[in-house]
Image (cartoon, rainbow, N blue to C red; front, side, top):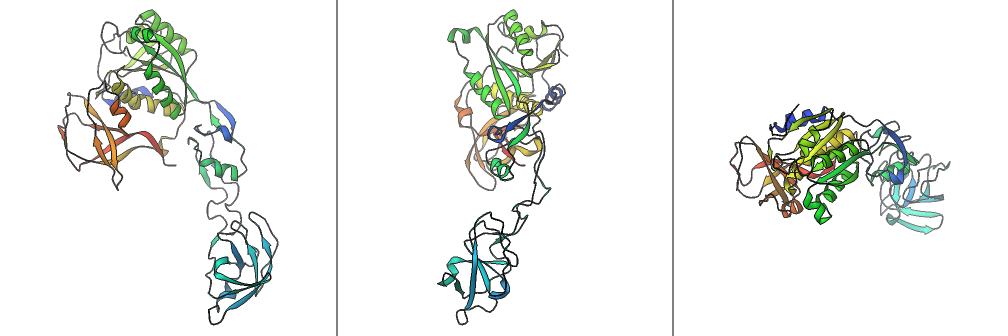
Length: 412
């Protein structure tokens, strides 16, 4: 707990651990139609309610037949099969294939009893509408998708905590599931701070943070811009605390004469500053507090510092708050450095360097970007950032390091 606004920089991992202790996952569950489920967090496991496919299924347009009837087929000794009927896709039939018989079948059609191979249409010679001739031996279950080959009945397909993606909906709809139980979206209040923003009537950073919140499953609530005034900042924070699950302030969190967010928080009863600065640059001013148990993330106003601060403390906090299964979200990948770069470290801080993937290899090749912490270009061009330890003075060409991605890869 801190009783003044001044920094006491905390190692990043410890800062994150301290912050997450004050984040309680949302327990509220609601049911939504599958068409409104994208980017929502599952509150239940989705289990296969049947074998998928439910029956042996044809992978080709052709003829369902008995493998045994094709064994002697060749160009010299073609085999003739009698066509007994036709099977359409996804149609359950009670037909049975007997010796010397076949059924015309479409891709997606269920094999009749006795059939154990599919003869593609293009490999046959049609004698008439009731007879075909084959000149090659089939294999058992050739061109057949076996029942349950995709998923077995009772198999867990999606685990609780998964963020639903558009591609998931095809399988969910196939199982005739029309609605899903999901966690209520975390409501995140955003308060931009600064007289200069009021004069301009706009906070560009708010748009970025709002959509990052959406990307990680939250619902942003723009609480407007606070003046560089303790009372105005405190009033907006108190108002936000009654409407949201987490509060994010942007700007005003350093120690200058107009940096008053920490003072405003400390002026509110039952408030505590849990983390006052982190050992990571850019982003060292990033801080974390609570008011009446409600968490507050304080982000710096410079674009690069704000970005690193949000990904360092904000994303993990939002993922925990939203009940996201962090094990299914790959945020870190190994990359290879494209060229040697000197690192200007500020001890004892670790350095965040922005990286752009320039070649997709087994290990992607990354170009490290450099420039003033006020520049937006690096954020626009980067795919993520790398963390360089405090005492490392250079990064070598070909060196393999870990890169934190801006956009996660779904692993579940």
